[in-house]
Amino acid sequence: MAKILLIDDDNDYRSVIKKYLENADHEVIEAEDGEIGFKICSDNHFDLIITDLFMPKMDGVHTIYKIMEEFDSPKIIAMTGACSDGRMEHLLNLAKDCGAIDEYKKGNDINELLRKVEKILTK
Image (cartoon, rainbow, N blue to C red):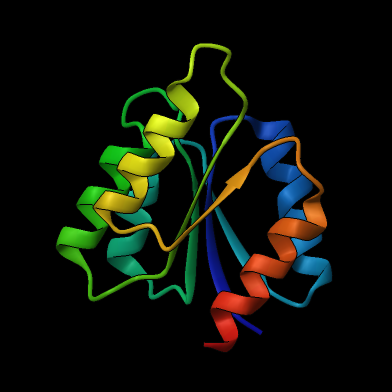
C-alpha cells in the first residue's frame, strides 16, 4: 500500500480517482488546489503525488516546481483534461520539465492511470 496525495480542484473527478486508488489498496489524501497540496506535503511523506495542472490559486506546474524544490525527489504524475487550443501538451511538457515523471490525460481509461501508478510505485 502506498500513500498518495491527490491534488485536483474538481471534487467529483477527485472523488472518482480516489475511489479507484483506494480500491487498489492505496491510502489517498486529497487537496483541492496546489496551495493546500503543498502545505499537506510539509506535514506528510507521500510515495506518489498526482496533480491536476489547471487549478485556481496555484496551478499544477507551479505546484510541481515548488514541491520538487522543497522536498526530496517526490514521484509526481501530472494530469490534465483536454484543451482545444494546444495548451495541454505544452503544460504537460512544462510539468515534466519541472519534475513530473509521468502524465495522465483526463478522459482516458482510468485503468491507464492505475497502471502508471503501479509502474511508478514498483520502480
